[in-house]
Image 1 (cartoon, rainbow, N blue to C red):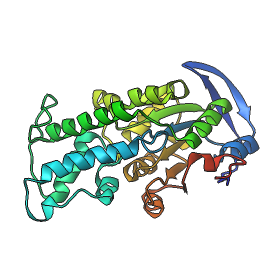
Image 2 (image 1 turned 135 degrees about the horizontal axis):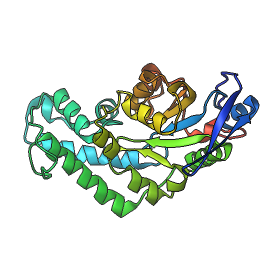
Image 3 (image 1 turned 30 degrees about the vertical axis):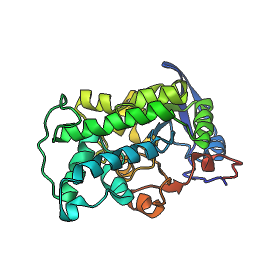
Image 4 (image 1 turned 90 degrees about the horizontal axis):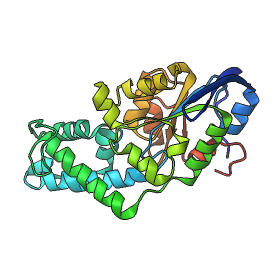
Length: 279
């Protein structure tokens, strides 16, 4: 199956190889439309990482579930119910660790102090809970490694061959490590991750700040950059930033919700966008 976003206007695309800027090269609209399923106005692409390029979203979800279920065991009533997949998608997915903790606590009516970055995993603070989750995630990654989705590798490789600029925008502070373990570093020369977001004082998704930083790093206006996201917060961020198109990647049976947040098109796998793909 090939999904075609036909915005139908030819455009000049800046070619990028590594960190070097090369001469402008005119790409026929049919080439971009037919091979990548993207409008000809696109000059750059920005990918979320977990759940879009790699299958680490499931690992994140499991780490959050273990962390939050441990936390609520000391509470009673509705606050003590197990953490659900629906809450993961709505409250946590795509957000920074600390923002995810804050959203969960507000949902359950639990109050904890913010604490500091130095808080250990047993500290009853926002940062302490975030640290506990990160420790579980890193332990699981070390045990099981990281798998890149084959369809995403195919699409990302085709994007690189086309000359479009490529960046990864992730709320995870572990994004660079995950890319390296998955063998994707060479295909994604620009990374805006949780460490960059913190260092630059950016507001996390669903605010568009991180995607706007990615577009700036690729010297591209949002209207000429495609965003690929599986998280509801990430899709909302892409829409808020004025990116065109925003492609929702439906890994968790939430196609309708992705469209409601602003996805222009929803696919089950990035390979669905490629010409001649069997989907």
